[in-house]
Image 1 (spheres, helix red, strand yellow):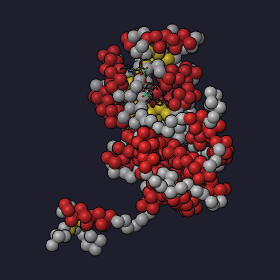
Image 2 (cartoon, rainbow, N blue to C red):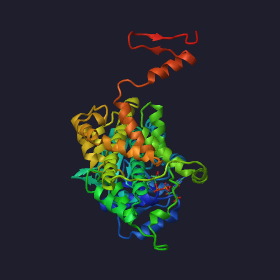
Image 3 (cartoon, rainbow, N blue to C red):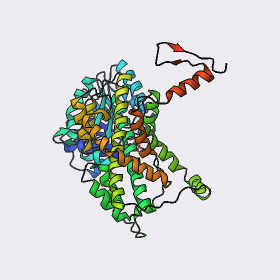
Image 4 (cartoon, protein in one colour):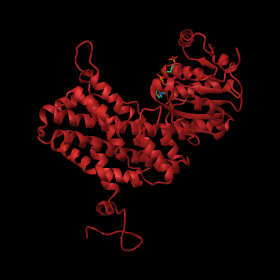
Length: 468
Ligand code: NBP
């Protein structure tokens, strides 16, 4: 068999599907897995395909065309370092390692520097879209040396999702840039999911809608400006009946949302570099609150709140929730894009914001019609400080803010939690407020800690002896 174009080690669900995607697109792929049986079973299940089975890492390295291109799809964290350490003695300078897992961007920064210093090429790449995306076309976010990207560009372009003929992959930037952008994508995904969950909760509890009615509402929303993969699957979820009990499956699912950490990483890093991302943070915190189920059940028996009683116009509330969701989504993406903008400067990534929104239009979990508009906004003005300032988004939020305010008021007045929706309107209001009450905060800081303050009427730093 000819030498393989690329090798992939880590044949769990993502790795296997990426291999099949590469092979379908004409590439010969060498395959390896720590547990050899998994590799053998995979090759046996795919007869006649251009796969080169490799039992050892030495076979694997020998099977590849030079400069070698090796994609590592193992569990993020220590396993990635372990695999790199085992590979390095077998490789030659100029060979390329691609980490396609969900690595923390600072790990990627470290690996990029170490490997570059040793003369190797390294790409840390986000791959979004879950197992289906990996098989049929993911959104790919590669960061690393530019010339390393050029070595695999053809493969990445071939396997990526396509939107209007444009591939959902672009060179993101140096070192950890790809994994940074993938993490931010996941943070935005957390925000989207929480906003949708709150919209569902408000509709469900105020209007007592059936799951079929909810399915119809979300399906209708999916044909308008909210069109997106997450809204589409939400409509599908409401329709699913549990075969064992004949009840809607969603009603039987325990209300504890788990997390693997990428949303938290987004919030943590946003705090580190001082960028407000309250809607993403609210989404992470909502998962944390959901996780203390036993405490919530106990508290529900002793802490009181208002009754859920809605007497208004039902159709009007449904439309208001739709508009509120759209406006909150704009505020959430404004935060995510502002985070990318700040990180681009902080880490010298020189990120292509418009192109990032463009590669999120297909393949990934947050894919949505809406991303076309973000792409257009950044293509029009690459240095746009905040999405809310773009003319077309400004018009959208101006029209919909009354709905978001009404929905948050309704939820709060009935005791329905809406951390993400309320954070979105608070972000909008804070961002458009010329004078915030931070003057008082500064006075307090100076009062108890002599931290000084600046004045509006003259330059310099001032301290007052407040207790005299
Ligand atoms: P997992 O994250 O479950 O990892 C399983 C793979 O890692 C197996 O091939 C396993 O080999 C290998 N592995 C482990 Br665990 N420890 C290892 C070690 N010390 N040395 C060598 N190999 C080791 O697989 P996945 O769900 O396919 O995800 C792969 C990567 O892609 C992860 O970083 C994940 O976060 C990311 N990702 C996943 C999704 C998704 O939807 N699942 C989406 C996007 C990104 P073994 O067979 O010998 O145990």
